[in-house]
Length: 100
Image (tube, rainbow, N blue to C red; front, side, top):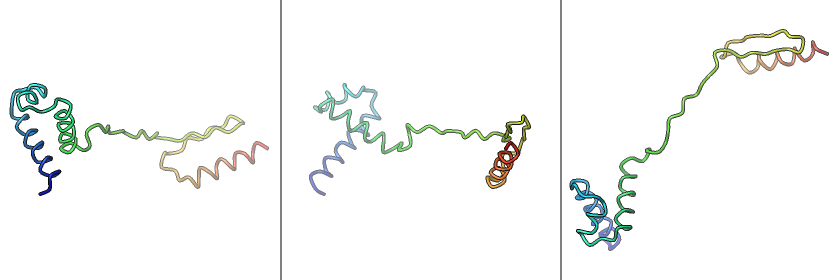
């Protein structure tokens, strides 16, 4: 094990001990002669590794139940939302031809 991985293992051990303690991060760091900022960095890092998706929010896609096309002459079509793009395009083109 190299020096860097030994340090990471030491900080992981501190992190795990801190989680089991009833001490704040500052109290734990002080009682183990660790710099507060350094210990806070490692706590954030290990927490992020445990919960990599935390911070992401699920977004629900709202799909309309129908698609409305209104022609210049006032005629309006209500189509199911699963209508193909090809058909919608044809209806729009048809409407523009009729209004000329």
